[in-house]
Amino acid sequence: AVDLALAEYRFDAAANAIYQFVWSQFCDWYLELIKGQIDAEAKAVAGWALDQILVLLHPFMPFITEELWHGLKPGRSELIVAAWPMPDARALDPAAQAEVEWLIHLISAIRAARTELNIPPGQLLTLYIEDETASAEVKGYLENSDTALLRLAKVKATFLVNAIDEKAVREDLASGSMSITIEGLTGYSPLSGVIDLDAERTRLAKGIAAAEKERDTLAGRLNNASFVERAKPEAVEKARADHAEKAAEAKRLSAALARLG
Image 1 (cartoon, helix red, strand yellow):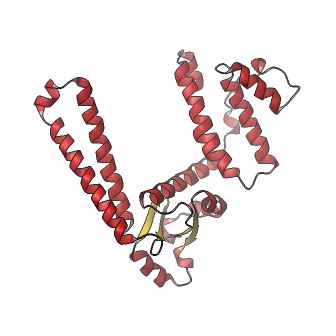
Image 2 (cartoon, helix red, strand yellow):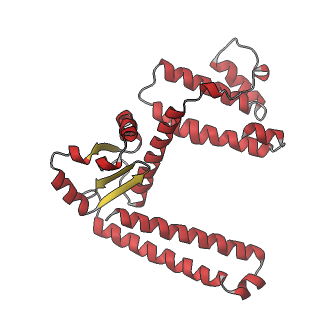
Image 3 (spheres, helix red, strand yellow):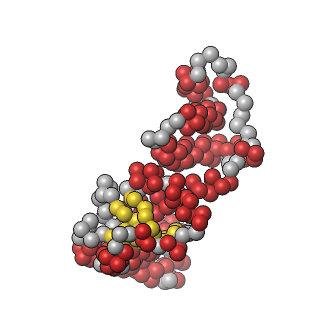
């Protein structure tokens, strides 16, 4: 993405691609995933990635990147003559990439569900997974992800069939739970005693009603040919954007309510 943007003289797009990689991938995920288990290999990979980031940023921030380059490893040649990063297909590990992407998807889904249901950030939950929904591959992913899930999503994953009293757990889940469904996995966390289930259902229902009302009002305006033809283009675009936002909000809150069972 960076090379393509530079080739088209889209310096803004190139800078944005670097920013998104550094912030959304390297910082948000790689550094978070290795916390607590930083060994020599993790340090080496992080150091190499940081070097590549400095090379990419050098055309945009020459002085500070040069200073950091020598600060990280004194005595090496100038950053301005360092080799530009080149992708090497032989270094790719599709299996590892698929596992990490799956883990990121799971953690993101759990975080989103916790936020929507007003679950306290520090509250530890147990995620009971339906055994038949998980493939052998996903079970392998879960075995490798205990520490990351506990630290980044505040959940302890276990299979429902391994519960000491599966019947009691299912009854607890039926009274109100957070459901998580992603590719290859369906799981539930009991919420009885964690949040006020009735109050949360009421809050979500009110939010859905308000979002749907605004969505329908905006839809009526957009379906009015007179409004679309006579209003300023920017007003029409804003109405469309607001409609899409309210439709998405209603859908998101409805999904959250459905999660409670």
